[in-house]
Amino acid sequence: MQLPWAAAPHAATAHSAIIDIGSNSIRLVVYGGPDRIPATLFNEKVLAGLGRSLAETGTIDDGAMAAARAALLRFAWLAREMRAGVIRTVATAAVRDARNGDELLRIARREAGLTVEILSGEEEAQAAGHGVLSAIPDADGIVGDLGGGSLELVRVRDGRLGDRVSFPLGVLRIGAIRDRGPGELDLTVARMVEEAGWTARGRGLPLYLVGGSWRALARLDMHRTGYPLPIAHGYRITPDRLATLRSTLQDTPRAELKSVPNLSGGRVPTLDNGAAVLESVLRHVGCVTTIVSAHGLREGLLYATLPAAVRLEDPLIVAARDEGSRQGRFAEHGDLLHKWIAPLFPDDDPAAVRLRHAACLLADVGWHANPEFRAERGVEIALHGNWVAIDAAGRAVVAQALHSCLGGGNDTPDPLARLASPDALAMARRWGLAMRLGQRLSGGVAAPLQRTDLRRRRGHVELVVPARDAALYGEAVQKRHKALATAMGMQPSVVGA
View (cartoon, rainbow, N blue to C red):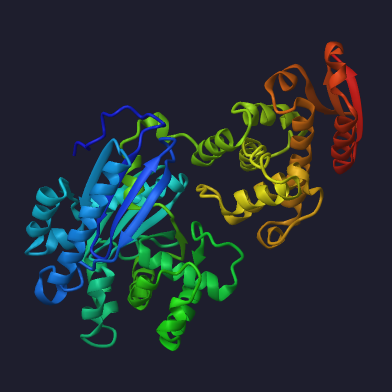
């Protein structure tokens, strides 16, 4: 299928918009920034419920159609006012299956000026799979995308999509199945999975969760377990926790559920059906745990258009570099800083090197904050930034490095110790002190880092400074050099080049 922006140049400054007409919600998202991991500039949804009457009537009811019309008119207007270079509009199961789906297409075309692509079940699955790969490049398991009208499953491994399938098991259809009697949903899922050849296909693998209802379920579990981050991406729900959640949903008043932080009130009515189908899918597909993905169909549509070389870029490093260049003083500083401190840490494994690189790219994000709060600013960005391809422990490690770099010293602020091991945080503190030395020595500009070297030799942290640059080694630099050497159990020394 030729995509509307497949041939467009991938300019970092271009904005693109996706209007996603789902069976439960209609959403506009406007993206900008790096192609590999575009930032969300605007995001709004309307819970139109296009699929709520499909099981009974086979049509989109009048109320849902009216809500969809209002949403499409507003979203088309907003996207054009935001000067999105491309506005791509896609529709999924409800419009695909409804007898009066053509009516909505006419409204979109004639009144909103939008051309709507109706995605097949296989195309939905493909987009969801690509969305997960865009955020979790090393994903190895089954992607499950639960929408209002359908459930898609797709095997992902080694950065590629494998088999995929679509079932009419969206959250707006599950109620009618359950109404037929106890155990009917599980029997239906078992039959559909078996007929599609997916029984035990995910044995021993994780199920990557995509879709608003499953993300809402994760947020409820995060609240119930006291999870210290408000970030759902990467969060795991184990089968035993899922059973506990189902009991919680049965015993907790809806008003109390609506008060859960970050849990959309509009998702509360779908939570129990979402939990029920998830439990059944895990049982029959054989997956052993779940992992929430912040990216899904919309991000997958963007990712699928990228050249192969761009897809291979590390989304964490790309995003950190973009953030550092926008908030820091000197765009090139982060990469130079990482290269400069690297000789001190030759034993770091590739995963640690990657986190260290991200921390260096973000090392200057706190410069414009009040000096008393720069370390706090660094921690906040690392913990709560819109990062992907990083887990909670990785966020804590980057946060600790920034905390130490930005003046927090050897302290470990809460909740870092609840997310990462003491050894990992100690390693990050040493990174941070090395970054802090590099920043003070260089003043944030390139030349001093390019003309000096930092290395470890015979129990010393050596700073190699050419004679012509000897003036760089001032009192403040000496103090930071000593602090770094002490943290590494070494002595500071300066040698001429």
